[in-house]
Image (tube, rainbow, N blue to C red):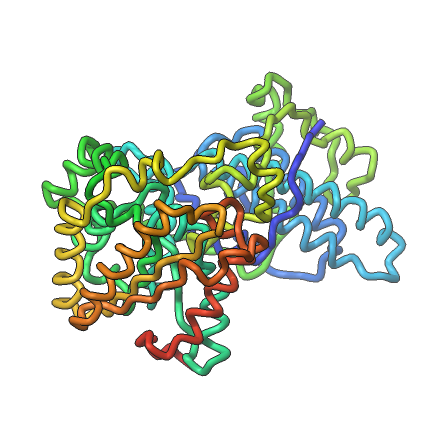
Length: 467
């Protein structure tokens, strides 16, 4: 039996992602099982439609392998849920239908997780960084779906979890800035050198935003320490391809949907011809020879319920996994930092022994990269705002406090030249542990609060969005 381990995800978010990634070309091997264009539209029983969609979803799931395959399965379960939810309150099938909605929702989650695990290919050489690759795919897909963002957030994992783009959109709209698009293109380990690569070499002019918020801290600008993230990037085939003048692109296929559904358009004979295939876990597709979609009964559907031992990846909010990243590139983390519990599980590392601060220097490759970024954005007339994100009192020992002061002075000196704006938030929440996931990373509540705080900053040259 199906063994889902996840709650039902937000349908709106799913719909956006599916709209981007579920284009199923005519050449797909599952096309024979997908819904064909009906010759006419007529009134149909929503219960019968739901059963037919569920049957189609279950059958497709037995065959699915590629991301497009699993996206189509997700679409069918969404359609089945929507149809079953349409069974009216006064319909005698209503109670049974509600139970089926719960069942379909569990199956939807199985398909959703499989679609995530089956990551779409970038059709580009590797960058030696899976999370960066997935963020890049998402960013390019975001542009294809809704257009280039007006505001782009960059930085390391502190930025990835530290500014909620959707909350920032909402806060700016509430202040009369109109409808602005915001995307978080941060990655674990991002430094000035990595951001320089993203902005100057990776993205085209048409993929650059109208405003950049670089959210981070001392680590990203410390030239004294080694830069493993950027070093790994420069040794990758993907980087060499970029240097050669080739930029990543997503497939340009387009798909369309029927304006109305014919629930009987799925060919039972086609399904029957597949019935001897093995599913991935070794089971057989159930024999549906006797199934009559117009007279689908409880017993018949129960016999057709997919039999699977799918092992799903449990969600762990403390891991910076790309699985939980939302449609705007943001990774929301739920837990709240409790020093008593945290230090039972993790060592307390002094700033004296923290590799992010030792050795320490603002003279070197990170500063050179920072200078290139400033010149590049000035030429493109794209404002740059650097945000020093909050830290906890537990994190800010005497060594880190001293380095933070040096960083603040370094930034303020350069910001006075008018090349960028600097907003120092490092010490605003030193005792507000409820905003943090650990001593130096914000949780989703902190990320939302930062979004609201930034939206209220009149010093930031926010672009005007559509009304």
